[in-house]
Length: 592
Image 1 (cartoon, rainbow, N blue to C red):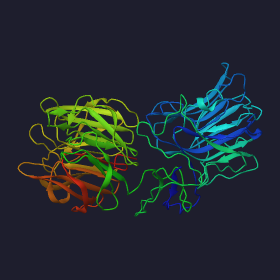
Image 2 (tube, rainbow, N blue to C red; image 1 turned 120 degrees about the vertical axis):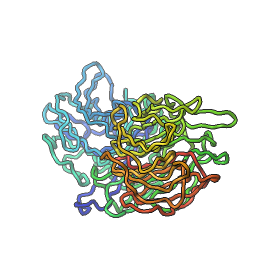
Image 3 (cartoon, rainbow, N blue to C red; image 1 turned 180 degrees about the horizontal axis):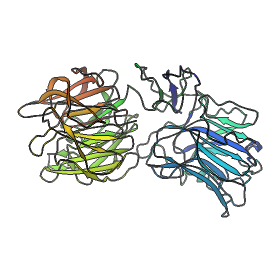
Image 4 (cartoon, rainbow, N blue to C red; image 1 turned 90 degrees about the vertical axis):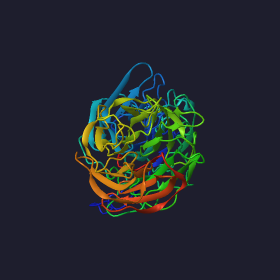
């Protein structure tokens, strides 16, 4: 289960709150026992709130609810409903009925590609007309004449879809959260566009199922149905603990640990906090606000030029403190493996070692940010890079390759990956200017590359539109000509600090407004002179980490408040002194 909580929402005063949800790992679902009340022979309404998580194991057929005898020949009760993942970048809303002998009826509407967001979805049938709604907007309308009546013999599945009536053959697991699932029998509640409910759904006289709304018990159901947790490893069910996807299994009435958020300034809003339990005193107002952790993102540090460093660090951006251990590296002394991330995954691309032989790496490795552990193989870059410029949105990672084998050649190549899907990188386009040793940052729409060497040091800033593959365009110029500077961003402002402009390191911090092209403006100063460090942020605070001032590597960390110009302040210390490494967070400026 997961915690859904809403702090005070500006303009709402905390009213009309929805509470409760259930978390569904990829290999578990809920079985609803057979009941005549689940026969939907006439008008009906099925509605719920849904939140999809990205996963390499889910590429299609991720449904939220289905009849348990799906694909059983000759039955008129086979059906499923939910957000249908076509792939890891888009999904539809679908209601499908099939009798197992070739006669199918379905209604389908396009939703989009914005995962990790709460949606209210509804299917409403009046007569033989079925309409599908997302957040109160009609997405599709069509004919559904089947009775959906199996005589009360089978029941339902929540979070899965049975292929032929057997639990072991269940496939199409939902991976994510469901809140306030309600079935109304005999009434088409929605026949035209409506305002999605912003309150906990209640039991009415015609409610035949109401669940996934208890703050403490995933098996609670308001109409008396019997719910059972089923764990399976069938042909379509993916193991939630495989490929680094770690998920807490259902634990009714026995909550596990969870993280909490801190209300800061005007950043109150709906939040989605880890794989834990429910905060019974707080409530959620989906889909308003932002589901990622506001003002307290978790950040992970990995790889470095430090032979004794075989570990990864983790820290909390909002709370100034020292780092703690996250996991162990696959290749400890690997330089210049730079990082990017979504709200759930951190990835590191490429790198270089000089002993026992000069070697460039084309590997991409990832971690699940919320869960301490070792990195896992993701795929390969198109060419083995070193000191790349890496940035990302919530779905796509961008890698400007920089130095490449065999002799530290410089390229203008930009790679891309879909962060939720394991696999090799593909070509995105070219930089505006061929160079290496650049810093990078992003908003939800733009990726920025700043500074670097061609081999002369340059102050170039260029940008790409992350969602659209293509070549970079000129943005403006920095105030100096740094290589190996450190960069981070909020959704609107980019910060670039430190670096190595000949003849010495710099403490200069610049800023840009990401949506508006133009030259950088002075922001303030670092307390020291650093290069080849790394930086990350949440939407309000940025942290500069480590670096190098000859002859020493540093474990120092400094922070700035991104919206307010000024000098950096002490944050804490890393476990190790590092240079040439990557750090990423679950709430940086590229995530919306």
